[in-house]
Image (cartoon, rainbow, N blue to C red; front, side, top):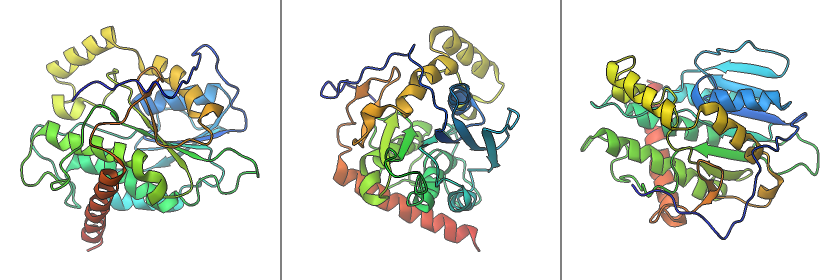
Length: 300
């Protein structure tokens, strides 16, 4: 993979010190109980937003502006249920942060899907296709178009293996994870024509100390601890990233746009070569076929 290239045609200047007042705005974070999702949810709360979090275990006390929907998003049936039941009619921004790294040896969910693919991409797809039409639908006339932000590694050149999305023919951790990266960028590129209503944007946070590498390094192992310690010393914290990103999520400069990607500091970046609209549509079609197959298997 190659580092993202700056999109110089889109000049966006956001001052991290200029933190907006988000009173009256609503943010929903899928995967907001840990890592970057939790940090962004907390930052939005401090700015006055009302926040809904979806994940396994809430580590923060619910309040009048923080609500929690428990879900195991390795189950695609559970993800589809969340998509149907999540109250998003008043939501301004929906943010997907749920993700893991593929393990060294292929892992499969009870629904027959490679685990990284299920958690990091197909769960998002299952949720989105259930709720996209309802997102922000009850807000006042004149409100900004609702937004979907998809966190991954867009712009890094990963196009996936469209003929083996479930990593059954040949497996490696990086190859399997590459499918999820390509899927999430495809969701931004082809999301609007496929799931109409919201505007779609991609986030590439880069390397930040979170729990996402536990699955591949071995949670709690010496290697895991050493790697995370080095990342924590050299890379930005989840909290500093959140302070940069929360203003971007609600930026008025994004009104009327869709499909833009943003790097670790919030600067616009170019899409991956080879992942244009036509390829992205094909990728989503194949992904939905895999999703439907998994949902059918889970209902038996």
